[in-house]
Image: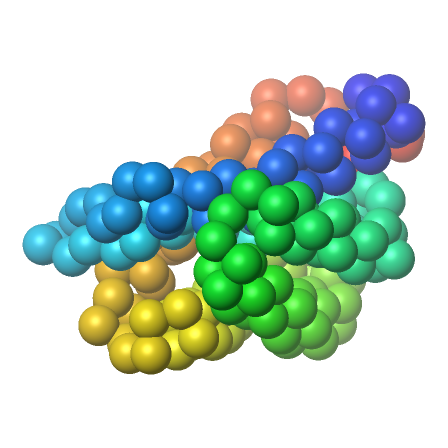
Length: 174
């Protein structure tokens, strides 16, 4: 995989998840996530964002991830309800900080281990902060955690399958 293309592709996908999540919350409302739980519709985008954030960190570095969060916040402000954009940005910033604190020390144990562990921390922080700021309650907490977990597990499974299916190449980013 061309490293420059992977950087741009992963960062673009990551940035897109931020306003997409907010637009889904605004225009779709609640969605089922399984086991009788519901969550704001952006939950699946945020679950994907957790994994994309780690991939962006791997391919482009932490500065690029922070810039992507800023760009996603600006896009959210223009495209979604400003109050929702503020709640989302605050949640992303705190979750990224906590995710980073878990991800970096675990990275030496392997990409997938670091992703899963940091995403658990990130999804909890993101859910608690977002729900508090956006809805002033935690009514959808179980649904938020479940929906984000589904997306994280699916993305990690795809990454693991890709890594297993192809031999490690020098410079490969996954």
